[in-house]
Length: 318
Length: 318
Image (cartoon, rainbow over all chains, first blue to last red; front, side, top):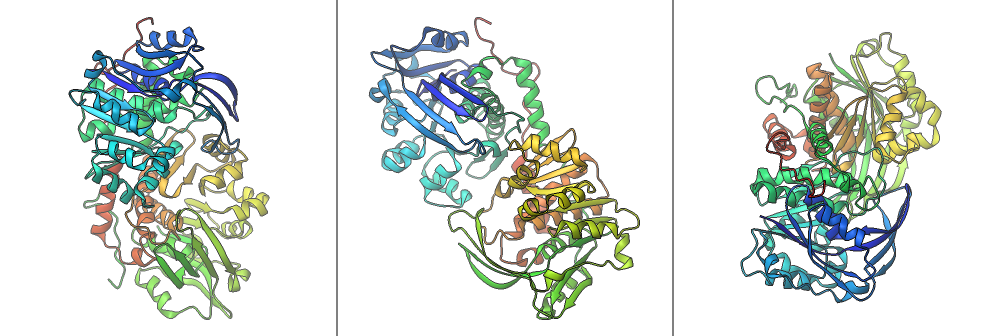
């Protein structure tokens, strides 16, 4: 059992209230694969330019990530420049996007990758996402997809077509509302599930995630952090922890999905504690176990006794 | 054991995407006392005008609320006119505020009310909040306070003085940040606890609440609703469920506070399902028990086994 991720590998230049970083290793496939690598074997399919530094390939290899699908093309690596609001880390402005070699990205999977049992279609053109899925002779056991408003607004039909084929859809709150054309989140998630996915994962940043299944809902809190350095990559790291846990355990029951979301939340919480994937790359088992326990403690309460001792008071005239 | 609430009783005219209502029974003390009345005895101290309708006093009396502290003065009842954003229920505009008789509100507690064991100082002038607290010969067992940006900006010193005297502080996210002068929520809550309160309850609307104690944090989700009619009063209904549960059980341990937050969340979820306190007033035991169970299910997951079977993968070079 292994995971294939198809997405971007990029150099990000980011400014936040905690500082700034030039040409930091980033991209959806990077964050996803590093987070997932602590739980399950991961292979990356992405494209970089000839300026991509060997040390960055080495960082992925050191995590055991299969980088044979990391294609190098003549030209520059995808670059993104962004700045987060100093007062509100959940708000950011994109100052520059240079697609560079990513503009011609047309993933062709090696035969060895076409048998991956877990597939994460990171945020790329939905036509490419559909094309990748079509390259599998046997459908992967679990297919998950992430996207963004750019594709919802610009390629809604293509996006809808591929959403119908996936098991898990990752979207943030505003994206689910926009995609479903429905402001109520419960109804919006229900509409998306009506298209095909078994589960919709609604990402809410520092407010955690909501998972919607056809007949269940799960709320996982985000771990409250004293210091957020750079929110970039939180969503992809969440997805990496989520899919990594599913793949490692093989448990795709509702209970497994709930735990996968908790693992995702933990990975997302580490991702934002540094620029780039620095904090994720430095993780060890004890650190992750400690935060898993802290997150369980954060969300835990003894259910209110709804039997005999429940302190209910009817009104005097009822 | 009983609860005293000092706050506003008002007529609200509200427009939301679900409709509109003129002169609906509202105000912090109304929502709080109705929600709390299902759990514990409540007395209201507030002022209304001579236009206040007997049927509205009757609604409170029918819930067993002690209305002997509801003073009637010549003039009109406090009126608020607001409109919620059709696209985003968490955003609202105040179109008109007429303080009317509330402008001269100067609560004088009856001797019988000065022995209440639980006190909720709803959102009023912090000088009045301090004055009310000073009228108790023996400090109540639990004192809780709610406030708003208007007082944080305009009467910071008075507010700080009374915050130092309370056990529980209710604020929304932006208010905690503004009051502490610190954008990071964990640090902001820590700073407030440094002033005196044992617990800070950070209200996040549809994203639930975070409780901060001196050495613990609890995240309670909001119940995801398919239909939100009017968010007015959600916070005060939350506080009513919270304080009602504390008073009914007498359990002011960390575990008790966690369960109180869950009860608060349930009461808040009912409050927003109708205009005014209509939905709260119609509650019965089974309906509340059902939602308590649904909320427990929403937040529940079996902890990830962090012992032997935890699927941890170190990298090949580590």
